[in-house]
Image (cartoon, rainbow, N blue to C red):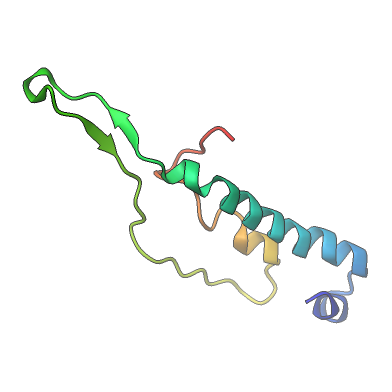
Length: 93
């Protein structure tokens, strides 16, 4: 990947790795690190008429995502927020 960026775009090797590959790897690591917390069921209040019942809210994916980007798009732009936490708000990390 670095060789392709050097040949196609003319970036120095260290810049190609730092701005494209390392950034993308960090995004993936961040997502994997926080995925359990983002998908953890949370307790919600139930109306008095449903007591003594309990309820939980589960975040579940709605489907599959296909990211289509032109060949000139940087790797980091394609991966950035490609798998946001549920529902659409960023949780505290």
